[in-house]
Amino acid sequence: MGVTTITETATLGGGCFWCLEAAFKELRGVSQVTSGYAGGHRPNPTYEQVCMGTTGHAEVVQIRFDPALLSYRELLAVFFAIHDPTTLNRQGHDSGSQYRSVIFYHDEAQREVAEAVMAEVAPLWDDPLVTELLPLPTFYPAESYHHNYFANNPAQPYCQLVVAPKVAKVRQRFAAKLRHAR
Image (cartoon, rainbow, N blue to C red; front, side, top):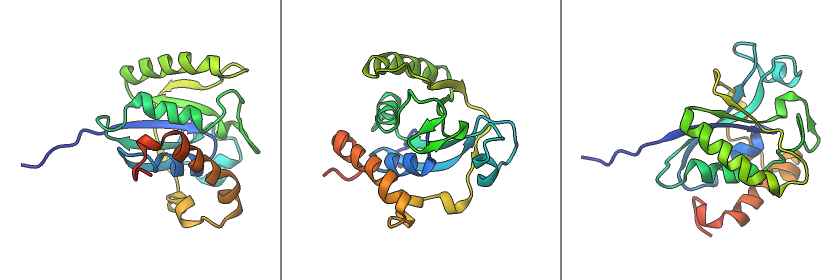
């Protein structure tokens, strides 16, 4: 008999999903990261609709992970390290509610951990956290060309200037948790 791996799912939004996807794929224990949309009112939104800012959806990633290798708390530590949770509806030059900081919890245990982590990281910032903490609504996967975007487009200027530094930050700050220890 094979060993059964228990996985959990986290859904997080902190700016462009290309950045989050690339950063979380670096971590040992993460088996899948899917870019998508959540938190809005329009069913089956498209990227163009979400970019217009009228759907209410945030760009998010849904992360499948093995809690024996990477806890939800550790996942949230990475989340708060790779985006600014104090800027309302903005990450760098990306602005609009689709780029908001949001944690969509899947159960009460995740909500409790998220509340605790938010309380722990809040004093590290000069401004108050604006991260929303909400129950997971429907998650809509993004169009296929968004999946593995950084890996498929490393020379694209946005990837070089915005995504790559976030991946480098994860590699530096969370070296012990990397998929391929350096």
